[in-house]
Length: 66
Image (cartoon, rainbow, N blue to C red; front, side, top):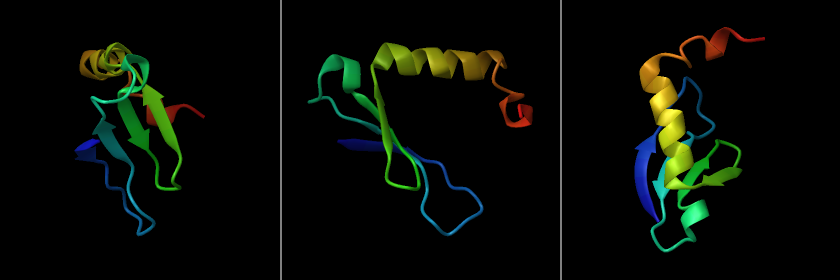
């Protein structure tokens, strides 16, 4: 599993991280861990959709959703 990015917040409880595991099944190659030890696994295509949404600006207001 290769570490790609660390998403540090303003706390001292750990940071969410992004990994790619090329030895995992195709539908589970991208792993995002949270600061509580949980993880989400998805395909590179699914992750690409998240990246495209972020680049297009459609996620800009996600922090404002209640």
